[in-house]
Image (cartoon, rainbow, N blue to C red; front, side, top):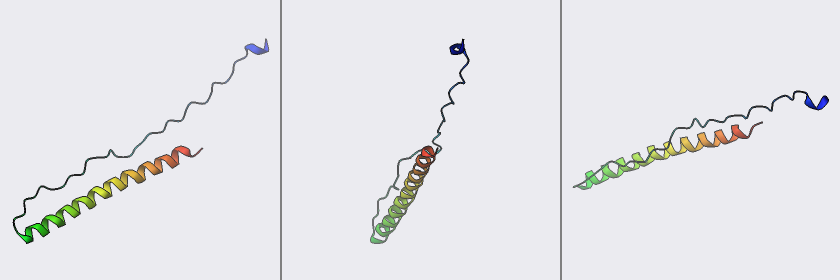
Length: 74
């Protein structure tokens, strides 16, 4: 009977792994400035901490964007 022949199995689904790093919370250094100089240093340290945090968030964002592009490729 021709209807009883074997049919090739469907192709296996393609797995997509998200290899992007996990997002971590941003942390600002604790401070208790008592002078204008200490206040200025505290501001500089806070700005540096925000820059590091923004760079980490950007890294994860661009990784996820690249993963989305790769997932859409045939």
